[in-house]
Length: 108
Image: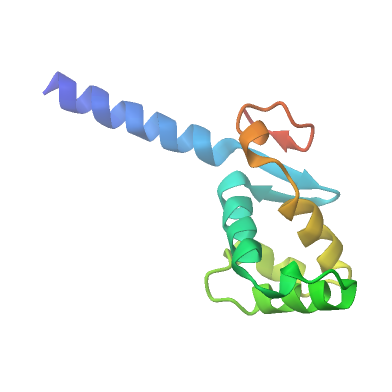
């Protein structure tokens, strides 16, 4: 019984710690897990492979229309200049962020 309780406590603590890491960009703050989902969406978009900034802008619009986009990005989709925020979030090194060695990440 103690082993089950200890294991449950461990996984609960691990979950809470992983949710605590926040990525900041200006006035915006997003969970690390949401930024990972955003990065995956942007990587899977074939439009972002094009060098044209206009086409990259279009791909961010497609990401905003994606049903798998985390809810916390929806207000950003409505703002002007969201493409710049998305591009900075896409370039955030999440492996470094998870050990809090990146200035934009807090909550470790």
